[in-house]
Image (cartoon, rainbow, N blue to C red; front, side, top):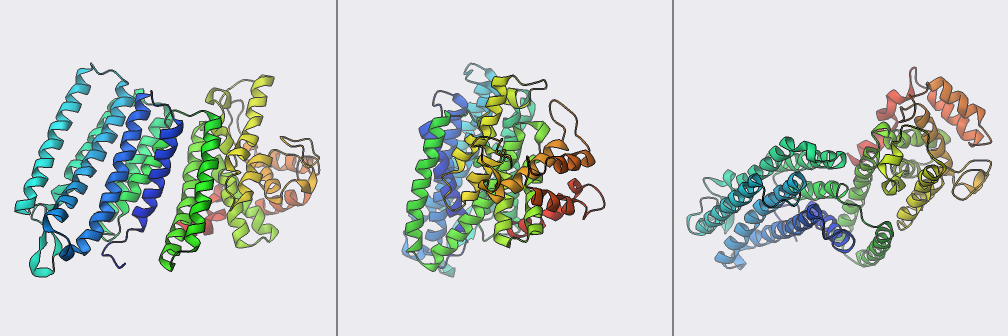
Length: 468
């Protein structure tokens, strides 16, 4: 089907939104007002994206569809965009004011938004007879055409989004650190994709993708579900994914292209997940990206192929995913940990392995997350593996992880020097680390005239070029 707009990004957005709806509906608290507002926002977002896809198809085949129906569908799509913006505004209000329904400011926002939305709905209905916003030109084979005030058709969605941003700025003290980061990234994703579609890629539905990525980012800041339920959800989603892959193999070349887009989206999502992991502890911000870059550099020095180096890079990005299940007050504790707290910290490697074991296409992810704290002499955790019982990828990430940990500020000490860290790697060759890999890392380090920490972009450049 040849369409006037590229809808691949919208299809990927539908997949992301449906997965988020499934997870939030089944396993997240339904009594938390913030979660409830987020869930309603997801349903509205899914409806808007589906309407966007439908109107692209119906507009291209307008000569076969009743005029009133096509006008109605297009009006409904624009109305749904405003509804999505209002519901994100409602989400921000719920974070800022909680469940306090008596707050006068909250009442004013709710009533005024409802009135404005109603007037906008009337304007879209009137457009069916006036064509001020858009119309179908019968002199040009029923072509979808902008009206004299077409640029105003999205104004309400933008205004509601800006209103939510103002509330976020005014009431930012009511947002926790995760909510602040995720909300800022949501706005960035929304406005960048919106203006790219408006001014640079008019024939690509980038705004749908921006909203879906924004919703995914916000997801990581809402109330955490029970861990066992999360594992069960990941297993069920993996079974669903496996079933979909069987169907994809029997589809046309067009669907093969969609699968390729989905795979690229998965890799981009890993980078977003790494950023979320690092925000749990501001002392380790950027840690996952540096570990990934060091690990990839070691793999290249070792002579591994491009695909292997790429997989090691992404495994490094999410090697600490198990920290999602660790309380922040333990991760950021400035003093000495108790024995019980240390055991909880150690559990992040096995938790990470459990979370990632469902990704069958990349078993390296589970191995690295689970075994990056194993020691070469067999005294590590959680499985007491020894020597080459530990996967090569995990042995590589262990060195990258240890070096960055030593040369970064932590909650309980300042960063150590590079020279000290290199001596420690040499000192523990054959006990904690693979001797050959230590030599390779030191060789990699001395390739640069200054600290290797200043060359993260160089080490990961081809990965970013491929996916950027």
